[in-house]
Image 1 (cartoon, rainbow, N blue to C red):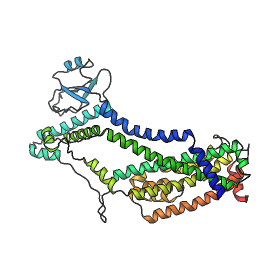
Image 2: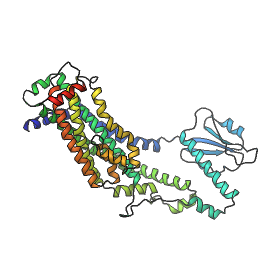
Image 3: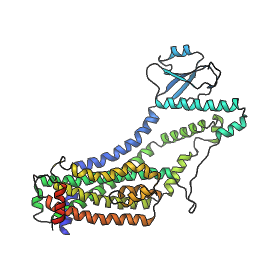
Image 4: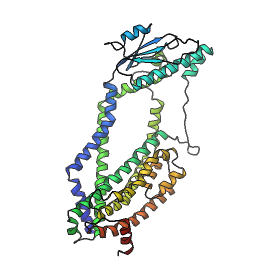
Length: 448
C-alpha cells in the first residue's frame, strides 16, 4: 500500500507542478466567463441600428414598431424608397407591400436591399410584426370583433404549470434539461481527458524505458493503480479550481455590470409587453424603473434553482465521475501498456469510446424520456451508466435504481481492474511488437 501511495504522490505532484496544468486551470475559467460575458457585452455595447423603409400600398401593415436595433420609416412611394436605399444615413432595406390585383389579403411581401442583406434577426422581426398586424386586422375588420374583445384575445396568455399530483411540486423541466445536459457532457469530457492522460503517461514511461526501473521495485499492478488514482486526484483538483475561479470571476463581472444587466432586463420585459399589444401608457403605469416584475421564464428559472436538489445532484455527479473514470482509466492504462504510439492504439481506443459517445448522441432522447426504457437500460449498463444516469438524476430517479447502477458499475470496475492488470503486467515490458485481440485473449486465459 505504501508503494501505491508513493506512486500516487509522484503522479500528482509531477502533473500539478507542470506549467501546462496551471495554464489550463486558469484558461478554462477565463474561456467560460468569456462565453458568458462577450455576448452580453456585444448585445449592450455594440448595437448596430438598421433603418428599414416601409412602403405599404394596402394600409394593412401600418403599425411597425421600432426597437433599439431596427428603426422603421414609412414612405409613400416605392421610387422614393429605392432612391434612398443604400445612401449614407438613409435606409438599408425596403419592405414593399403591393396592392393585390384580385382584392384578396396581401401575403406576398418583398424586402429589397442593395449591398448587405438584412440580418436574420431583422428579417424574423419583420416577419413576426407583419404576421401580428395581418392577424389583428383580420380579427378587427373581417370578423368585426369589437376593441374590448380584441384586447382580451391579444393580451391574454396561457401559463402552463406542470406539477406532481402526489407532492405538488412543479416540474421545472427547462432548468433540469440544462443541468442534465451540462453535467453529463462534463462527465463524458472528464473521463476521456483524464483517461487519455493515464494512457499517454504509461506510453511515455514505456517508450523511455523508465518502467523497467520502476517495476524492479514494485509490482506492475501497484504502478498501474498508483498512476490511475494519482491522475484522478489531479482531475478533482482541477475541477475544484475551475468551479472556484469561474464562480469568482462571474460574480465579480455581474457585480461590476449590475446596471447594464438591469437595463437589459428592463428592456427585455418592455419588449415582451409590447409584443403582447400592451400600449406604452399601460407599460409606464404598470412598471417603474426600480421595481420590474420578472418574466415567466425568469420566474421559472429562479424557482427551479431553489427547488432542484443540488445536494443529490452534486453527490451523484461526484460518485459517477469517480466510478466512470476508474472504469475507463484502467482500460486506458492497459491500452497504453500494449502500444507505443498514438497510431498503434487507435484500434483499441475506438471500442472504448463508442459506448459513451452513443450516450452523448442519444442525450436529447434521454432528456425527452428520462424514465423511459431506453434511459433506464443505458443507466444500468456499466459502460454507459456514468453519463446516462447523470442525464436522469436532475429529473428524479428512484434511489434503488441509482444504487443498482452504482453497484453494477463498482463490480464491473473490479473486473476491469483484474483484466487491465493482467494485460498491463505482460504488455508493459513488451517492445517492438503489434498486439492483436487474439493475443490479448491468450494473456487473459493463461497468465497467472
